[in-house]
Length: 111
Length: 115
Image (cartoon, rainbow over all chains, first blue to last red):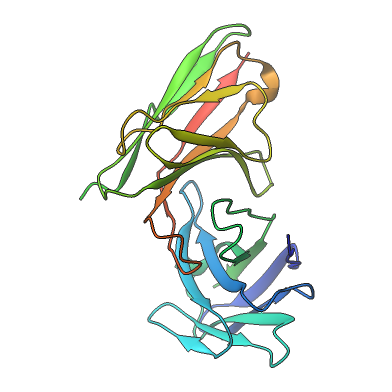
């Protein structure tokens, strides 16, 4: 299965944009890129997903490289409530039953 | 909708005891799964189910049993608890159809300590 690589931790100042990177150099053509986040003492929650084109929703934006070997989750204005662990995962039609999470990126937001 | 619910929220066991972690969802989702999360680590898949009567192993299935008799419920059983099973357990569900775009919904977790 294709794997993802993320930095262990990142810091951001409040109200500044945050770019969370994810590398997935072995991604296949049918893999969707999903992002989840886990707030302290809570279960993970869905953030955004995409296949090839950049995607926007009310929570974040997802920028996908042209070769799809990397992607970036963008939080446009970080708030203290965005402090969480962010997971980048790949989903495809052949292994969709198993959703595997890596260690993710722990984001700290500095007031 | 209540979403995904888990009981209990906290549990302390002695080594060798057995117990069942409960998970229920009211969204009529076909797919359900159990994860464990150890301190400072990501989630590891224990078991999953693609529908009532069908279960399969994930990454770390040893020491755990599951069954799926209804669409709504997916209990996780520890037959003989060990300290290595001290962890936070999350249940998740997602719609059927097998689309790679499916969103997973997670429960609030059960914090288990085995002494």
